[in-house]
Amino acid sequence: MEGQKKKVRLYSLSTCAVCKKVKQFLDSQKIDYEFIEVDMLDSGEQWLTSKELKKYNPSGSYPTVVIEEVIKGFDEPLLRKTLGIE
Amino acid sequence: MTPEHLYEILSKYAASRGQQLNRDREFVIDILSGLLNNEERYGYRACPCRLAVGIKEHDQDIICPCVYKDPDIKDYGSCYCGLYVSKDWNEGIIEHRVVSERRPPERQE
Image (cartoon, rainbow over all chains, first blue to last red; front, side):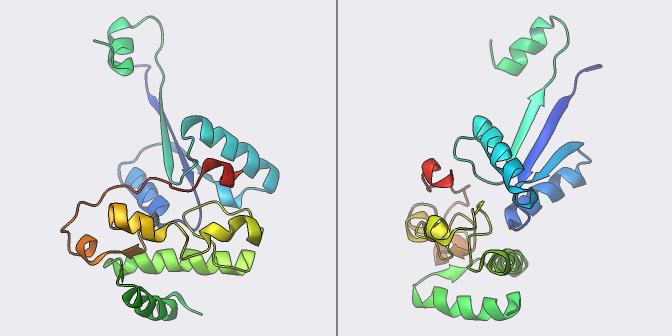
């Protein structure tokens, strides 16, 4: 899997106990991830980030983990696997 | 108010409704800390598992116990936050599933 890795982002709230459980899990697995505590952002950023979150999860619920696969070049087997195409 | 004090109060409230607090006390204390943080910053106990806007009229439905608690417990055995649960949920008789957000998306704008 050289040159390919998953990008992980955790949308979280500072007050949310389940969010902490997800964070602890990712930390325990030594996952490199972007951590966003939406309620701690200023109001403009909070609005924008909420909109961004709803693109991935229309219910806008917390915690939400977004895992993005980065695929370089035309790697058909990996594209098929990632896209769930037989 | 400390989370521990609130725990005692809400245990009694839950029992009065035929419900219970999640048996994971440490997890519940964490939720209650978030609830008290929200009370401090908004002036009311907005659900700590949802993004409040800080306007009471707008957040009315998610002031804990939220209006979605009872239907969530009926369908899942647990409220969205995992704070209030049914006896069967606590005893592992019913499966612990992720509770889908019941709050309409337009209320989150």
